[in-house]
Length: 557
Image 1: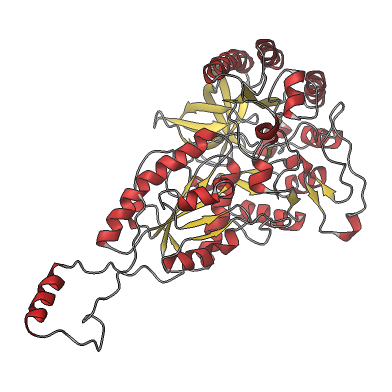
Image 2 (image 1 turned 90 degrees about the vertical axis):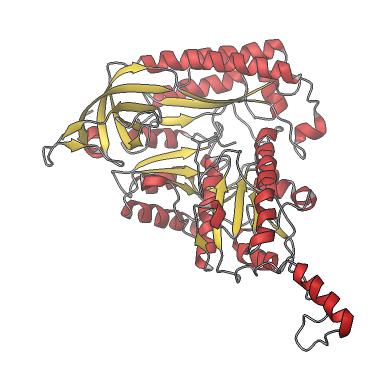
């Protein structure tokens, strides 16, 4: 499961559920008798009656744009993988002649890139569709018809319901069908609904360079693999995104080099199980031995030999640009061989931050989840990671109220949060999904109010421990990649440190560490050394000392 990202708003970025428009059935009216070219008009009283009736008729709606000439409005919901899917979909549509609009009222096509990981995520889309239907109904009366499409995981999971429920949607495209979007839109222009939700065993969109949509161009996401084979009992991802398949390393390196040339300063490698990356495109590596799993971990599938693995990819990507930070998400704890941990420790531009999704602190619940490890094995991995990468920042995912979870199980999760003391956490109440093993084999028997109470307890404990972890940084200097103005004050700047923790500091003139440039205000994409003066569970605050570079900062430590 990918952790939920920062809210990415507005056309083409993440739009939280809330605004706008309904589905209508804009079908071009056929011309009646006497309106077609060459038709015979009625005579006498019948003619007068016909003309009076014609005068009352509304003119037919304007025809829609020709295929490939419309304006597209994109909204993204959910994780970073969906942000990347939005960029891929837009790259395909742009190549087919479509233009992009950030104004909903100008759009000929509205596409929602959706999430299915929890029921709440899907409900946000249904609410949005009901709002969009009002806009569509108005368009039916006053202009060319509006076409609405659902893309991504929800399209894959609920195709039939989406197409038939209140007839809200014109096109449905699953995560492996974005290449088919131009054809689907052409079919929709003829007044028909169109869908393609076929899952692929090999689609990675390796030949498509996504059109970056993140504002400022400081950070970017690069998809390195799609799908997941882990089959955790609670998770819908294998059913919405299919089996694991990895992009060829050559295409990933090409994309990262392009981003470096564009001035991007941080790249996050994306995948549902990113550290199980396995590039089988080069024949000479197809017989290589499978790397070992983390100690005490197992899988539901046999070890997969062959291919270039994640350590090789991480080595190659981090060598492209010494001034570009590299992150990756979301990994599975089973796939952390020592060569990966050693590489992270050695390379100054690989962030010393790892996401180790635990999901629960109870061995009994972990077994029901089919996670492939015990509480003890997980804690052993945490200690090994901290020994291998001093000062590493850790984040995790937790699910409250999974099937059969008792109060004792819950307290074990509470104690795990206290023992590990994560810097960042993503915590959710369990939401059963159809098709999953839990849906077929287990009972969703923890009452909703108990789930919420346990979730709030986990959040409270996480925040207490994160605050303690972050308070340990007060007085220290942190290298911050500036992202832009703080959302709460135009007088402050916001960025993130190596551990992916938000850092706020005054927007003041700062010296250049090397003395090569005149003092000036930091800009998005600059690295600034900040002395931390205060901390909370989610944010550090400090004063800027000077602008610097990633390489220079590493050399000083």
